[in-house]
Amino acid sequence: MKIYNIALIGFGGVNRALAELIARKSPLWERDLGFRLNIVAVSDLHLGSVISPNGLDAKTLVEANFAKGGFGRLSGGSGEADNEAIIKTAPADIVVEATYTNPADGEPAVSHCRWALNSSKHVVTTNKGPVAIAARELKALAKANNVHFEYEGSVMSGTPVIRMAEKTLAGAEVKGFEGILNGTSNFVLCRMEEGLDFASAVAEAQALGYAEADPTADVEGFDVRLKVVILANELLGANLKPEDVSCNGISKLSPSDIQAAAKAGSRWKLVGSAVRNADGTITGSVAPKQLALEHPLAGVNGATNAVSLNTELLGPVTVSGPGAGRVETAYALLSDIVAIHNAQSANFAKEAA
Ligand SMILES: NC(=O)C1=CN([C@@H]2O[C@H](COP(=O)(O)OP(=O)(O)OC[C@H]3O[C@@H](n4cnc5c(N)ncnc54)[C@H](O)[C@@H]3O)[C@@H](O)[C@H]2O)C=CC1
Ligand SMILES: N[C@@H](CC=O)C(=O)O
Image (cartoon, rainbow, N blue to C red; front, side):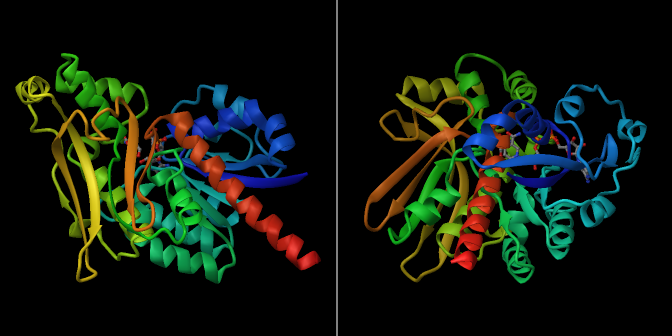
């Protein structure tokens, strides 16, 4: 049985959900996926850090109600989050980066990824900052160190988009895309259609684990802008930076705008898109759009996301599924680890042949 030692950087909603899944699903994963995940270190700004070379019990980690600095009470623990030491020295095969997304410069997560890759540890992350801002550098670093940098959860949480488009649609020639790429803002728009006020709808999205640490990123479109950059760079071969993508959010939409759209047989949606122009340049944008009810994105509700990829050979291909949520996003981390495991198993098989 293959065992992957993992270090969790950030122990908020997503990484905690991954630990919960490890506690509940390990026997199933051993049987169906052929590996076991062993948590050897955790570091969190609020809780501190802990290394345990033999592994920490996932159930205990999740169930213990740690106070601020609480990891300091554990054997091998400290009340401070010493991310750099944890990432560089913990006996981990895989670093799971799920600290907060910084839309400005991606830090400190970019550094977390660099430290891990330079220590020849694989990185799986749901953090959009390092992917949107430093993917080229981090992919090159991963290649140089013969490890993987995987980030399926950075767009549409656990719903497969990046790997699906790259692997399953290889050769179909993606020319552009448009989608609903933020669960919080879509949830807020839907709740406002039901009569809730903006602030209460945002508070609900926070309670459900959909929103960013600072929900301004959700409602002002900054989060979608990062996702447009990620998809454009991955699927269209662009080299966009966040500041290249025009960005408007939903915070200026009033309840009367929303009611007026309903009367006119349409709905407001926050749409992220990118297109390859005739001269080969790529243009990306984020903007609220009033979509007729017949539009394929108009019926997408709550924290569900959807993206239509416009391909040369198939026309539009639309993927829809959860765009946010703790367990849904933890699943993306598992899917990244499965991808690493499958690639490694294929390599071993090739070497053995
Ligand atoms: N929750 C969701 O639905 C989704 C989240 N993501 C991304 O996944 C990441 C994690 O999301 P959540 O767990 O929901 O966020 P969260 O806010 O619940 O947890 C983040 C955790 O990271 C810790 N943290 C912050 N800065 C740190 C640092 N410098 N060092 C160590 N720990 C630090 C915080 O104390 C907190 O416990 C974020 O980047 C988010 O944008 C991506 C897709 C969906
Ligand atoms: N806050 C984000 C989480 C996923 O990226 C969202 O609401 O979509």
